Length: 234
Length: 265
Image 1 (cartoon, rainbow over the protein chains, first blue to last red):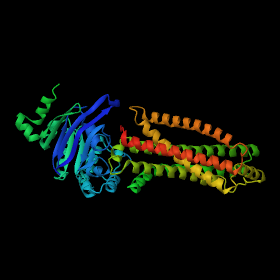
Image 2: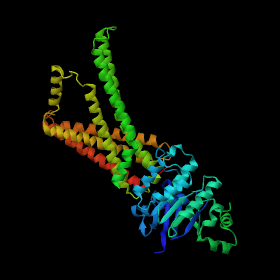
Image 3: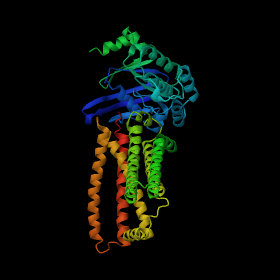
Image 4: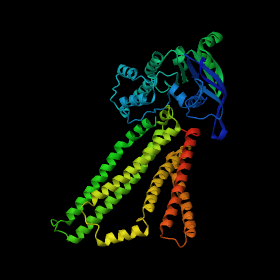
């Protein structure tokens, strides 16, 4: 099996079916790829990511991760970075490391301490004393310290300055297992373009395009960022 | 995994519970010391009887308020842990752990029930501290207490066991209803906490009406047998079954909402 994620005719609506967030999408993510899930705000990126992580239930269609329907087994395979800060503010960093170590058998505490040390983050510090940017870095360190099959990163560079963006992207690229897949959602295409193997354009709950980044560049004779602007022109 | 979830559920609130029990014990000791001082011969500047009465009444009121506050705060802490850990931003982590929704609910249920029982036990301990060495069991109090015990047929072991089971069923029911209220409240786009409180009150309003109706039916059915062991046993068993049903329904509702209708902030 060469794909880590398979979905067929995946549907999700809100407001009792009035707002269709995903309109029957079908796609497959290969192993060992960095995939950009690209689309404007409200295109269905976060809904798709929540479905992958079991935070929402689909209204229709099928979704498999590593051959399993979404459940306890797939949660063990996925390392998820949401848009929000999901760590309890009262916890200290070393307590968060113990927490991840307790629940995820693929968590590498040594790697987490190494990354914290490189960033001069004291493991004895409590999250509530940290700036928003530092909290996001701690969260990213926890997510990237797992040896997961699939990393799902929802807008990891959305709310940070350009210097922090570079750090986050280099952390992602240098810490993931080459056999793993990264699904990275963003609307800041220019910043992530160089690291993407595949791109998925999504608009109003429909997949507009899903292909290797290199092929897209060759076929259209432009960058992914330019292709995105062309496809999503207002 | 349940053991690990429980560990973190206990750790999250342990500090607040220890603080609360410490304050309760402090107030119990204060009440006992106040009564002892008022009873002593050193305070002669006010009419001795008035001072004793005021001190004893003041201490008793303060202590009873503290007991009430402990129970209310226990329920609030249990509800807040459930809401924050599962329905707030922390839910993004909790629900992506390789743990089933059932395990989450079981952990919250167990920790909530244990904390409620612990608070009840601490109130009992503090009451022993507040009344230590006092001669409250004089002839009149003792005979009054015995008459109440007899009237409720708590002098019969079966009735005592059923009362204890009913109390335990009540604790389970309260915790389960709190959780289902939070789960229903999170479906709203705004004012989720207010919504959860509204749902909780509405459920207890309905339960109160059903209980009243049930009591009337049982009184009719057991007419002429009031005050007997049979009467108290039958009503207790009915209450246990009813509360068990409410608990099971609330847990099933919570589980369904957590699995199918999760709506994290």
